[in-house]
Image (tube, rainbow, N blue to C red; front, side, top):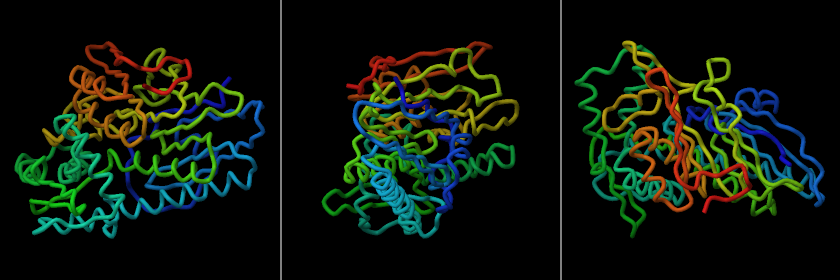
Length: 368
């Protein structure tokens, strides 16, 4: 039995952008997210299914809970959304007044600059993922991201001189953390930190924590494809989540891919790829995801879905794996506790699908 069918990664290209917007109807969110929601079957335990949507961090968020009453569920969801809105003011790289933007504007810093607990946790985890992926994920990639956004709008590759200048402000040596003081050192001028590949996952995890504090044991938080779930809904084996196709609906989805799904509890899943944000320049298809080594978008079509114990990790690993490609990313992900990945890519007129060990079957499970 299942509670519904949710799509992981349907709009995952949109990251920490925009300002807090008014909530929109459930039907509209379902269409945007590629989500089909079925009513929960009656379970052995008395619980009320409550679901709300709100636009946060530039994308639709949906929180679904099973609660003792509608009032309890509404209160928990409201608190979860409030936590995400609070984190947006810290982690956004679009808002010039966010803590992250103000930190970037201070570069280069003469001494470690103290940051809030939330920004510290995200940066600390970002550096861990950076080191584990040999720089394929890099929180200092902001200058290159800005150039690539301009390239996507203009349809022209960045000029070599501008790329070279941007690379001077990107890389392992440009960002140093001082754990004793929770301070951050930015060593180069024109630095711009970009947490778009990890911040939304972190916000999902914090929203789950808020729901837990409100006594909610069965919940799903879906930030347009960055998804975390807790215990299975009453009368079910787990949360049924569709794996996003290589191409958006109606644009030649990969045969058989639309029917792929996971059945998860106490886990997170996210997909990165170019299905929804791609550009063709000089006859080549590029993703919105920037390779820190080249400053250009990752070549496509390709997509990677990552399952991990938490959404912070799943979010960052999906970005890094898109940069690394299946051959280099697979052993990295296989070596991380509780993580697994599925890769889909096209080339020479063929579709190639591979997955790492521990990729969950349709049986309910948490990755171990």
